[in-house]
Image 1 (cartoon, rainbow, N blue to C red):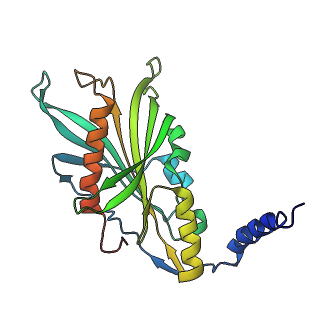
Image 2 (image 1 turned 180 degrees about the vertical axis):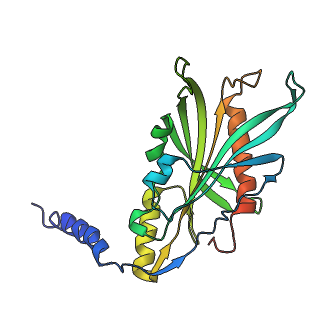
Image 3 (image 1 turned 90 degrees about the horizontal axis):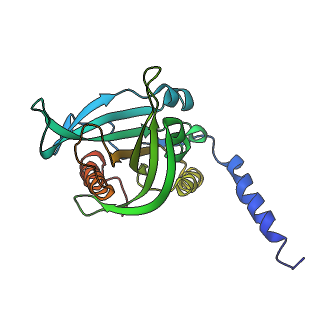
Length: 242
């Protein structure tokens, strides 16, 4: 064995073992995300919805949720009943409880239970209206919606999802980086940081209530614009470091 080769497993073992010597609890720093959703912003109208039974059963009891289905009229499109044809966007904010060891997880972990088969993943940088950059994860998936009644067929949608994590003074799109930030903050700053993950999803392709197919590019642009406005109104940037 080379002289230094034995050191790598020793160093890794010490690093992982150090988790058990971290303070059990420190002061709790609140996330910079604003959990109370508006009834509307820009042209979007929010319809609040409760968390799913799967979310309630998987996460800790002190986990907080802010979820909404958001609608916006499509310009110049009216249905046969005389109503505006809407775009639909699903927004979810999940705020971790105080227990760092039983915190939130990556959306990829629970999306399959919601019918998603993830096809592609990439990193996208967005900017708030104030020019502050933040990193997001973009997922492209196919979502299968189970039939409500026996004898009905399942429905499949193409879907785009963007998500990111908002801590007390950090924003990241990387779950592993978030974990290391937690470890460092507990060890060095004596602080437990509550994190929220923000996710926004939108279907594209053939949508039942829209005459023309929605292109992936159109859905992508609308979801990015939505998150830009969201970042300007629902994140306290005075807490977030440059």
